[in-house]
Length: 130
Image (cartoon, rainbow, N blue to C red; front, side):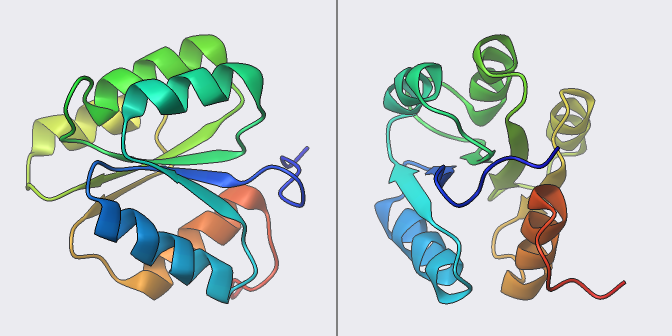
C-alpha cells in the first residue's frame, strides 16, 4: 500500500538551506508537498511523531550523517522510503545507502527529472513512463 502523500509531506533533510528550498520548489511544481529540515535531529523528532512517506537525505551534515539518519529512521519509522543525496563520489557510501534500503542515490548536481521519476516511482504516483 503506498504512503498517503496527500496529507504527509516528503521530508528533505539537508543542512544547505538553499538546496532544501530548491527541492521544495521543484516538488511543489509537480504537486508534491514537502517539508525541509536543516537539522537531522529535528527531522528525526518529527518522524517519530508524524508519518513520512519519503525522506530525501543529504549524506554530509553536522550532528548526524545522512547514513546515520537513515539507520535511525529504520528503527523509528521503517515504512519511510529513503533517497540519498551527496556532493561526493564515494562508492562505499553508495553501497551503504543501498544496503540500508535507500530507493535512490544521487550525486549533486542531479537531474531534476530523474529525481522526480524516482520519487513518483517510490510514492507510486502517476507520471512515469511505463
